[in-house]
Length: 228
Ligand code: T5A
Image 1 (cartoon, rainbow, N blue to C red):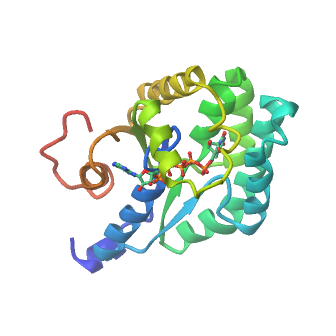
Image 2 (cartoon, protein in one colour; image 1 turned 45 degrees about the horizontal axis):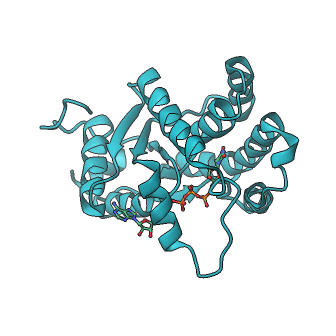
């Protein structure tokens, strides 16, 4: 695609989702680099966080201090961080024609607080309505990986002596249920979600993501249409 053609396209909102250590941050960075090389303005961001106010809430949420308040209160606090992130970073970037690639977004609340915290669908829908307004990801890439591999990768990356965060401390049953929750989200919204096999090498995952972006958002024909 020429730079001019790329510029003429609307800015898209892409989210990366999945369990612990599946490679979201790595792939968000690589995707933004590849978009930029193709002449498309794009930024990477993350949740919880992404804006100064939301980063302050991130520290609190990952410390485990709010776990005792229960899944409903935790979901509301993640949503509060998300509102600041949308208002101060995501919406202004999209309005300026810049693609936004977010490492986690509202599906994380659906999976972690919703499916695993036992929140009912009506509560989650209402929370999304007030938090997101009209904003929805154009494409969500769900990086799928057996949890033991993801947790081992996350452990490898952790600085020596650094503590596990609130969710990394959960047991194997939690992480297996989390994987299923994400696959259920993908199955329920196939027009928005693409499942990527994250057990592949970093380069292979990056290529699978680029194939999905090309086919779903850039209008390119794909040899791998099946499954995308
Ligand atoms: N949360 C978040 C909620 O409960 N509700 C919400 O609404 C939201 C938004 C965030 C936590 O908050 C929860 C979910 C999370 O538990 P976090 O610190 O941001 O916590 O942690 P994660 O989002 O889980 O991200 P991680 O940093 O743990 O993992 P990533 O980003 O998925 O993985 P990444 O890219 O850092 O890679 C991990 C390691 O693996 C290597 C990398 O080099 C790195 O060392 N790697 C690979 N190795 C082999 N093959 C590959 N293909 C590889 N890809 C990456």
